[in-house]
Length: 476
Ligand SMILES: [Fe+2]
Ligand SMILES: [Fe+2]
Image (cartoon, rainbow, N blue to C red; front, side, top):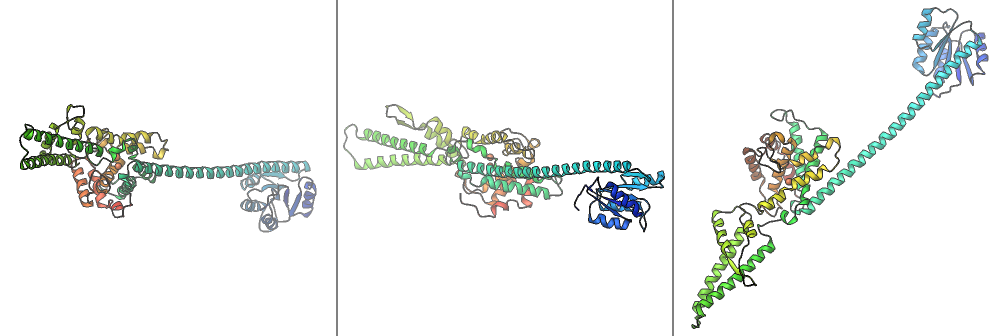
């Protein structure tokens, strides 16, 4: 309905009075209409908006002036109704105001009075319309700003997703041997968290992660190993105890020692001028070759990262006593203390110092993640990632904290992380373990107080491990 602040309507059964009013108020507004009864007035109101409607209380037909006011209130809440009556009582006046009348004028009234009442109503009307328009403007502004804010939020989220994806690419470029690990750990960790949500009874029956918390868990999982960018690459890729160029160097020294030993045997056999004996020569050569071959085998065997047997530890003692002649003429130990430290590692390929450097990736991750201004919903990302190598019994790292101090999200991530590391086919320092064998190892770790038994049960019951193992792996 169009708003026209300059149209008014006079409702009165006396034609003479209506004409008088129309004539008197014509100069005040652009249009003055009139109606003899409520029905006609309502038909006009349904067609047009009248900011001000003057009405008599007593009208012909089935509807009184009060009925008319009530109906207009329903049809056009913006219209101001002013009651005109010659026989008013206080009760009638109160009733009219209750029904929503704006003003009440007693007949007979002067022209000045009616114009003053119209002026008041129009002025009030104008103020309300101004407020209304301001309110609409404000709402439009808020809607516009809300739209902009939502777009900004979407842009930030998109930017953030891209940043996380780029970070994961950076981790894997640094450590191609663990290609896809971050994504798989994220998939497993989120799936196990969702399985916890579906669990009604038991220890974690009342634990529920919100969608925002699941997002937090996903980011923490994707970035948990980011600190590996701060670990020397040769340590991440170290497949044997000695670096390959160092092993070559030592084998070369063994070869040199072999020649020195051979020479010395020949000297002792024929250095005094005795006649050359080919049989003796072959015998000495074969013995020397056997010894040298055995030493090379020992060195190569002890260089392997699998568990060292006691017999191999004994063999190390022999290797430690070997000497060779340096070009300067000095006799020197063939294996240096640093080589012996590498070879003495009982399990794996890293010495304690190297292991510490690799383990430092957790603290690097925490420092890196703590520098990101996470929004409130994601504020725990650094803390969750920081505890992914902690173990319930305090035997984890880097802080050695115990169960009560480890966030449940990190306990969930620990199961996913260990599982993926075990089944991984592409790590240079270990063989891939079958899914069944990996689940047995997880069970053993829960039994010895490293991993959370209740969470592992959910991992097994919900077959969370199938999330990554049933899909074909992407090529690194
Ligand atoms: Fe890690
Ligand atoms: Fe990891």
